[in-house]
Image (tube, rainbow, N blue to C red; front, top):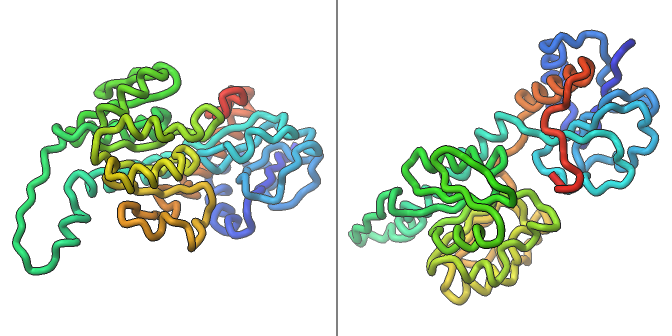
Length: 311
């Protein structure tokens, strides 16, 4: 029987994904299939999905075996009560590589004081030598696929890296902490903090006024995770008081970030327009096709979302 695969993302994504999906499906040995942006709901076997698509009611998709998310984050869909089918998040090698490159670049930017160097291009010769990486402790909050990869890359550059996750993790070369006390320990010892946590009820506003006060004076925050991980007002207060040195933010509670938002004008905030990393069609299509093949073979799906945990 022909396999029916519905592509349910924004219209602009279809031309980007159509050819890579066909190539990936055929590479997995799937040849008798139909891939389209429209088809009767009762005939759909798999949904390739983006949470910002028009499809929000999964009730009619009674034959669907899995919803395969194109995004790493699932907070926009995991709470949908009509979604009873298995949900798989995107763990994509291209997305991981892009995130490692962005995070490493931003951490090195702050570590080396590149902003200050650029600001001093006035003809005045004022040498300022940064410390070695081994003397600049970095904290990574979130040790999933992306967090672990970034922590590993930073450790390879000789930064002392402490990681934190809600549950216990063991990653070679990384000092791992978990739980409430572990979070306090990581914050207190980190001159640069990178946020790569999923957004759940337990992580929203995890960097509130109390958490931010535990950071060393002059600490820098790099957030390519989710905007709501940080309490905006507390961040602004910490920067204005001089306790925090800078915040480089790639994600926000509202996107695009409104033109009148105070983040745009703050001298200690760098606004990055959600470009830290993105799912790459070529590599993401391979993950989708692999999961479809596994589903048809009766094998467990990869990257299955735990609805209770929210990721």
